Length: 562
Image (cartoon, rainbow, N blue to C red; front, side, top):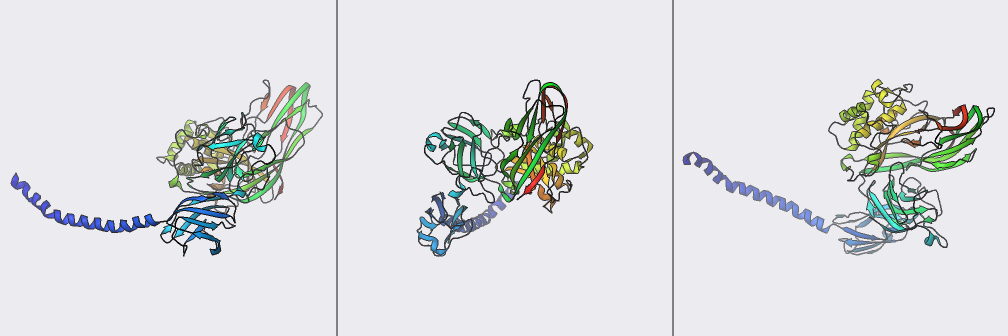
């Protein structure tokens, strides 16, 4: 046995010095490479802080850190990749730079570029982009005051606890406002439109709790690094700096169209033997990060509730058989296009516990049949083994468009029935896509509204949005992606595939998801309707001795585009 094993043992002995030499050579090469890399990293400029992080273009900025170099030479400071003029540098030391902020720097990533490389980035925010604090005697004493934030940075969808005073016992019409960056989003002094800010969405469950001394919210879609304030009937708090981090890509709000629009309801042929009432729930454009400045221009009657979950409630009393009654309302809304560039590999799963919207908007409801067995089976097959929510959404859309064809005249009893028939109109297509996404654990909303053609006509339509933690809501128009046509609307995107992830400024949303209402009176008789420009379970409610009537709901009329 000793003879049998000795030759292999001798060969291993003979090879050991050669193997050792090779290993040493590899290690030497690796060390030769690693040492310069380590040296470069050790000497690379590092920004520790900038002062002030919020200031005015034209003012002085102090950059503190290390490895900037004893003099400027060919080194420079960059604001979003652009360097200021040579005369802007006031001082340059190895650990301190004083530079005048260029006038173009409104919201900029600041970096130092020196001989040994580029530094990390720090955010500079122009004060003009932040909310205006209240002014006037007593404004600070009576208005809300922020004492602390649970964190000065966070991702879209992350939790933020705001502590302070005078927030109010309940939210009501109060709001938390985050800086929003879109085209022409600079906030003018005393401008109450809020066009430079974005607020958490009630429909998305982003307001989690509200008390006089503490508010818990989720960082909303559309928020960017800048300021946070609390606003209520007593005024606005001071500005607190907040940085939005870990965004897996970019979202831009581009272009802008301002629409004036009108809707009305006419009631006729009333049959009644005595006292009666009729309640009308009329929708108006939704306020979202891409739809802003919603304003009532005029109403033919004073509403009972001007704004309840995005609807106005009107009460008509003692309608007579021989009388024609019309309720009309005019609104103004600014609509921005949405452009997204999602880096799917950088998407992170939601934390545990997940934001409330993962429980509320990733489950079935009376509108979205996410628990239907056929929908669940379809979603599982479409997703396969994929777990990334963005890629699951892509796969789900491809599978849906392969299985169901768009037909504007295909009216089914339910979205699940449309799936079985393999034909769907835009309402069923939008709801079906939302249902498939929810069945895959992705928060999704069908959106009802209109698209506006070149002739200024509005066509009732529906599309979908889905949510990605850290990024926010992503729009998808399944009908337009499929190549389908909506009336005489000509899509501005020549490449129809862009309607996955992007949206033009000709889609006007009225409701996102189902607006669920309760009867105003216990014995009220309600009327629902499908395939209008709004998803809501009640449009009309009659009370009293009225046995019959006729209602006519107009389509949306575009009265002006600016």
